Image (cartoon, rainbow, N blue to C red):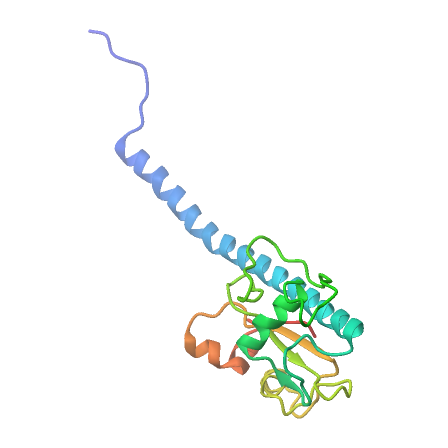
Length: 191
């Protein structure tokens, strides 16, 4: 009788190798998720700045904010006002933008009337200096929330336009509690 000199893996050795691969994959997955979230935050930050710049360029061109209604006090745009503003900035609304200037260039994912969305699929929020005094008052609820999160109670926002994203939001309760999101560093702002 001939005996085979060829070595083969035993079942136990094979299970040990599979377990090691599983442990390594378990260690890598959270790191990959973190990198993906940081990339989304970076993209949102860039888009906040671009949107802010587009709004300021529109105001420089037409001497008014890109909204249908006249704004006389500092305020955060509602969702419908924001959607309309986005149509104006991308040149789709010729009533408010008769020169059809494209102030903000959007990608393929943009749909007229639905606004520009952040990497998580939510609308950006826009705060405008409605009284044109060069600052957004601390009385605006979003400014109050960000100030509370950063220990700057009562301070005005020294910008004419503020754009922010709520970032990664896990629940509807988080979505409505802006100061909590800001404390957890989940929001992305243009200031």
